[in-house]
Length: 157
Length: 416
Image: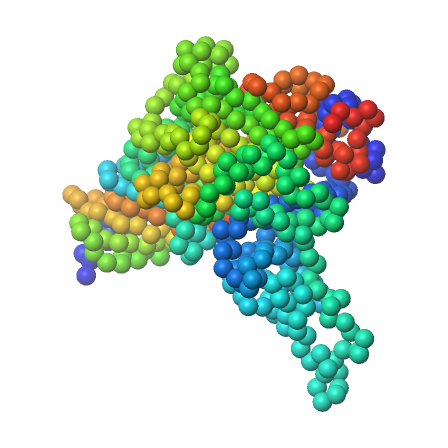
């Protein structure tokens, strides 16, 4: 049985994760991850067929930092505002120093003129570690259920 | 009428915006290009290795199935029941002994021949078909299917030249280079871009944009126009290849050239440089080779990221881009991991490709009511021919020349 404090720490982590992305605070978002983390966005299509290709793959925190630096310094993409709605947190089983967890998300996107659409929905399949009362992601696999990506995939999901 | 298209110049250095927005032209493209004398990319043989394996795909707006029969032969047919028009295969892919439409259970073999009609003779002599109903005349509409180096193409037209001739020596060489060994499919990516499909075909032939729009290439020193490289086309200029050689320019020259364009060459380094590592695996030292095959495919190598791209039209102002990434069957675990890592460079979230979708969408939005033309004359006007340098968009004019020929909208004295 997971302690209440741990559950709240994991819920806070998900809440911050979505809020940092939506506020374009990507450098703060990076701090949702542990140093030895792996971040991946995968399509349900490839996952079902056992194919390893991702839509975005960062095998460690340095690659995640590189992605953020590239978005800031080198990439051009649509002017957009995101909103994550994250719910249905499931604490699955203990892993060393933390827990395997899942949550579902819907992410809406507005364009430069404020026209909105449902951009992405799916599941966060993750492992969190707990240290000093705070939780961080050791692994985050974003499984996208609408894998025909509208427009482009710039800001992480 | 489409025939009233006015090309201000016969060398396609001016392209009317109307070509991206006119629904009549779009309908004509479906008939004269996608159902015309062309070969369209369907899939890789490696996606349908076993008898009964099928994939569903699209040629233009038309739903198509490619599959393998019990003898191992690959067939393609339109995914539309000969009875009432319902899609016969509903899953994206699978394996079946027969294809059965769910609506009235008409069934077809792998070649698309009608094999079963329920209650064909009615029940107790009542109902069913008239005596003159001929099963042989109600097959699924078939495409010609042909395979080159494990790549499956389909054509609706009996007039289309044999696939190898259609590809020509240049494209056979490029596809042979990438696909000449057994491949292993690593996965797919799909992307819906809100723009006319031809904007993407142009984008793929425009070497000029690459290092300007995709700042990642230059900022991190992966690819730049100062490298030795260029463009090659087939004799009819309908296919093209853009290429560059690894390590063929000097950092100082690149900084000087890009400094004048407010692009910061080599300004940043990656914390994890494995993303940019080039492991030479062909006889030449090209680290970039991206080709397009008219009308719907691209074959890509950037460093060790290998993929095909397929364009599926979704109306005049949208298309899907389907990326199929592959490695070689004899890649070891480390090489597979390397390719999966470098897949970050391309696709909808690609560090050097996400910009293309944005460029196409803003061009589509902004040109809707424009009566004028684009400007295509980087690398010169007039003759359409290969270039041994990178700052050019000559193959864009090659695309339009073949497009205009097939559409029967060539200007007087057209350059081909």
